[in-house]
Amino acid sequence: MFLHCHIWHLFLQKLKNLYTVNMKTVFKIIFTQVIMLISLSLFAQRNDITKNQKELCETKTDTADFELFKKEAEKQINGNQQKITLLREKKLNAKAKANKKFTKKILTLEKKNNELKKRMNECTSKPPFWLTFKSKFISDMKQLGEALDDLAVDQYELSQ
Image 1 (cartoon, rainbow, N blue to C red):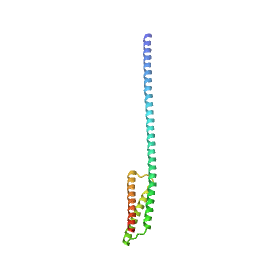
Image 2: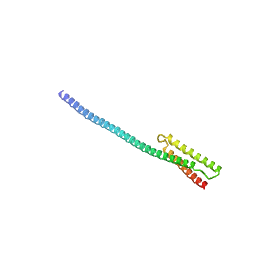
Image 3: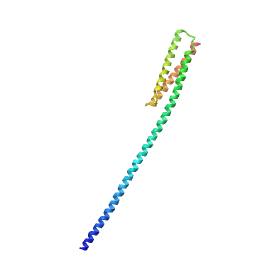
Image 4: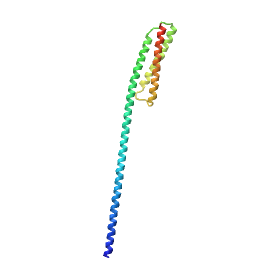
């Protein structure tokens, strides 16, 4: 019987050792998985922070670009208004019909300049389609400037 108990005891001891080894392995695996999950979530958070910082920097750059553009546009609009005022002040040495036509052109160009000024004043922040807005505004501003220059040349020619 003693031998039988001893074998049974050895069997239980082996089983206990096997159980302890397996539990240690299971705990190691669980611990490793937990560490990996924590590392991945920290890495993902770090990437999100980096992405947000990048977007913030781009937004600041775009905002700075918009503010610079707005200041330059306002300068050009004011310059156009000064040209319009000068054109209006100069008298033409031409017929009344030519003067009336000339005055009508000045009014049309002044209206366009005021429309550009209104469009720019309505933009308190960068418009959603910034590049489209910017290129259209530059194009319109350029056309107005060229029309004013052409009108000044016409005025000079009519005064001769």
